[in-house]
Length: 540
Image (cartoon, rainbow, N blue to C red):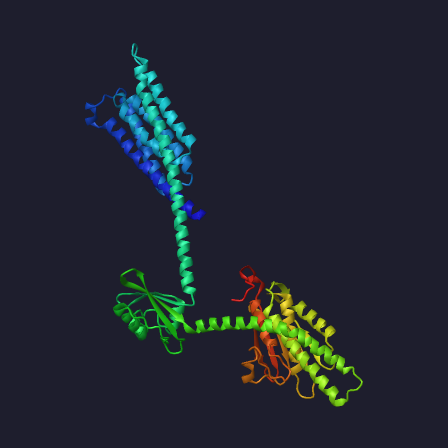
């Protein structure tokens, strides 16, 4: 905004300076006519022709030089106007003295010079030139005063001209300040409107709902990205709605002609989701332009499903909380029963089964409660190389690996990412436990690696948990992130679902990648630190 306002102000000053220079040329031309034209002899008599001719030629030359300089561009406007007004005031005083019969007209022309100068100069300089011209005219009247003449009468006219100079300078300077304020306000309002238009355009372009503007000739004037996708990505030059979407054109015709709105879902092109079109006029009783909104039914279904899952999650958390107390009582009673000396092997086996299922139920309850009270992520910049090495050491201290192996693979150069360290710890811990449990060949120890690397030279940072086990069949891999899906007898089916939810809360993605030659890889693609200013800890 400041640069734009400065350019606009410079253009205005240049126009005002050019006006002053053209006026000075016209003023000098009048001096030349009065000095050299035979017709002017009927109006005035030159008392000193040679100095008058010299003054007229000098004023004309200086006026033309000033115009030529202004047209080429002036960087120091204030200094230039100061020099021009100095020449104009002194030249006008000299002309009024040499051509005394025309002194009233000459002094009157000087009002324009002082007024335009007040538009380009600070107030003090403007008043200085007005005062200089006033004092010069008064001094001229005193010098040319004839013996016996009335001094008050002779000074009245110069005094009135001085008052006019002062008033014109003050008035034009005030107008210039108001013009600058108005111009700055107009510039600001224009910039605000331009920004608002860009924001509106961006909002409409990024809307999930398709938006189209159609005229009465059935031609599409504008459409956003969602509408373009829902129409099947048509070529940009195709604008006829009947060709783009015949069914949509038919429904628009029915709505325009009979006011009937068909709200059944329809697919506008092959391979696109079904939409429900809605129509609205830009103005009441005006069908020249119609806005068409295309509501993607899959988005509506997804939102309804999210609301349902959210409600079920709260209900599940409430139920899980109520189950904890009786479950604890059952487990405590089973433990006491196991300490009884009168139990045979069959009874002890039944107690063991009770304890195992109590542990399983408790794990399910903990996962559900963790899902319901998940905290917002607190992202920070992590060195994934150091983090992976520290994680492996901590895991080995907390879990007895036996014959299994777990190692970290890091890179020579730094691998930095933006994530919540606690969330990342929980996710990778869960993935490593799964890899140690399921990622082993029959009769062989598990071999698990935690790898920190970049996807490519300029790619995002990654954390990968890789094992050399039998891998996951494609049909099973497509469902492993769904809640409560498990292939293990004692699994809860919530571990990978919770891991993906935590990754999404950190603007990261968790995916399964098959490993060539056998094995599984769970890849976490994290956000780079450069995205920190626009990071949002809440998943979209």
